[in-house]
Amino acid sequence: MDELIAGLAADPWALALLAGLVFADAFLVVVPGEVAVTALGAVAVAHGLPPLWAVIVVGGAAAFAGDVCCYLVGRHLHPQRWRILQRASLQRALDAAAGRLRTHAATAVFTARFIPFGRLAVNLSAGAAVVPAARYLPIAGAAALAWSAFQALVGGAVAAVVPGGTVVAVLVSIVVAVAVGATVDLVIARLRPGA
Image 1 (tube, rainbow, N blue to C red):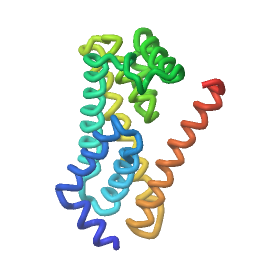
Image 2: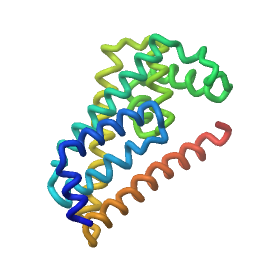
Image 3: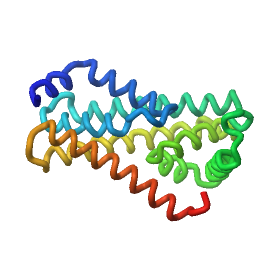
Image 4: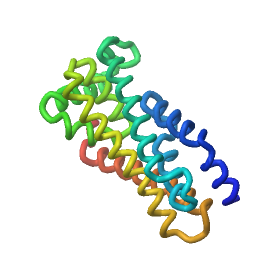
C-alpha cells in the first residue's frame, strides 16, 4: 500500500488534484481541502514526492485563487441580497466580517482562513464592502500561504514522528487535521454562545 500511495503522490496529477480540491473548498466547505493538504504533506515527508515545498506552494496558490474568486463574487454580485443568505444569522456574519475588515483586515483574514465558513464570509464581505483589492489581496495571499504551510507541516510532522508507514501517517494526519478544525469550531462556539 505504501508503494501505491508513493506512486500516486509522485504523479504530477497529484498536485493538480490537490489544487482542484483546495480551490473548490473556497466555495464548497464540504470539500476536504485541509485534509488534502495535510495528507499530501505527510506523503511528501514520508516519500519525498511531491516535494513538501510544492505541496505548500500549490495549496497556497489554489487557496488564494479561491479566495480571489469569492472576493470578486462579493464585489460584483452583492451577496447581501441573495435569498440563500437572508437568514438573520448569516446576515450578521457578513456584517460582522465587513466591520472587521474595515478596522482589522489582516486579523480578520488570517483568522478566517482557518475557519471554513469564516473564510467564505470574509472573502464575500471584502468584495461586497468594496475593500480595495490592493489592500485586501496581499493579505489574502499571505494568509493562504500560511494556511497551506500549516496544514502541510502538520502532515509532515505526523509522518516524521508516527511509525507504521505512509498509510498510518496519512490516516493520523487526517485525524489531526479534523481534530484541529473541530477544536477551532468548539472554541468559537464557546466564545460566542449566542451565535
